[in-house]
Length: 629
Image (cartoon, rainbow, N blue to C red):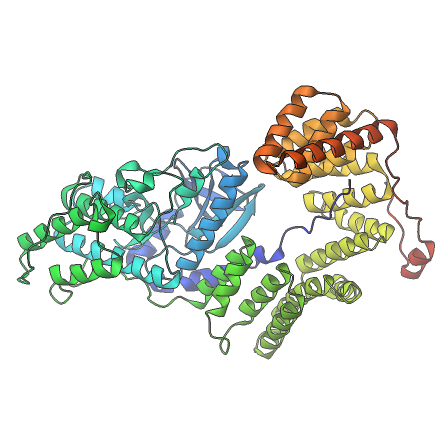
């Protein structure tokens, strides 16, 4: 049994500029209606705090929780929406993996006009939130297209505009992400963000929640789902989104959601501009889109756009005067950088590399080179990672900027360059990290470099140096679970199991949603006299938190054998059979190994950890004193 090092969280998540966020919304901020709504927010009573944010509104859906927030309450600013799974899905590993995949798809699609942009991910109070623009209520308090429909049917010119814009947005998104399927199109997922313009959000997030280990039913609204989409396990295609589009179009025209049926053959369209004819043709298109048989629906949204242009030509049905602004057809540089950052934070590294490769390498900003380097480093391609990071450093150095800001950004690039060296050149990585830890102008980068240096020292059995560095960090960051967990790893390797358990307990206290820390604590407890029973409870917490890996399940099985609990042994074998291996031979092997390890733990015959001696010469050379315990 050996505890692996925790590499800790990424520091790129905090590199989000409020100035860039505001610039991203510059065209919207020019709208007098938008400015008026921003000013109203300053007088909105808050509903509590979420990290550094003031909550001004909160919404619950069957799959998620959404908080609309402001950082400051006394200045006009764009609101931020923070979205996460409902609490019952936090510990579901299958749902979380599906959620991450859907967020990655959404992030890539969000550079298309008419798609709600994702600004990134934020870790707040132990939970991961999607960060995106918050919706401001319209003149009648509407937030979504559903709100608008509930307050009365929109005029026909608005229906034509909505129909065309939604279809065009899905066409643009499909060009960015070929084969894209939203999976949960409905009016409540279309935000009336800025002046009567529906912006599409939630690409499959509700459907992702349905892919849980518990086999929950689809958490969308059945009335908008195609017959196939009502099966959570079904593989969807664009014709399933076409069905949902047909339901929405029919609801915009009639106020009710129609049932599927057979498509009626449409008559030849005569372009006469008649409102009565246009309404009838739109109803026919809606019926065709929601045909029971997929083969009777339009194949894609390009075809739907063509039909709409025949029914209501743009020169006869221009943009209504009620529309304040249209989505920008060209994604801003900030949005492109946000997508790359989000994909890296989601650990969708191949997707991040594909996305960055689609940008022009001649005009690529330094941030994209850096994210490319991080992605290459994370998929074990250190040579390509270092080449990308050197390009990031050269690109950033060439830009004219104030010295302090340039130094921070170059230090950040150097940090990830050190990480790329760590895989095959640990001495070079340690040298770069020592330089950053001592000289970085940014405290966050300096702390991250110090932590990473301690992790390298741990790997190279320079354990007392690692202990000293981690204690130094904890003197200023006592509430950092990552550092406590790494300190526990050092104590495990020193054979100081009581100290390791104490350190891991601190990590669990500070981050109770992270299964890794329960796993670490359980391992330390296994080495303590009589600690197997508490270890089993701790491993159970890791399992309940979504850790169904072979390592955790076999550790738990070892603890069950150590306390001779047949019921737990049977339960854990069932979990191993479901999530690790269904091979009876492998299952028997895992049981024999767990039983043998349990006997050795009880008899005290496990191989002893080599205790590292205190390196007095190193302490003297660096004029360091180990802080007292």
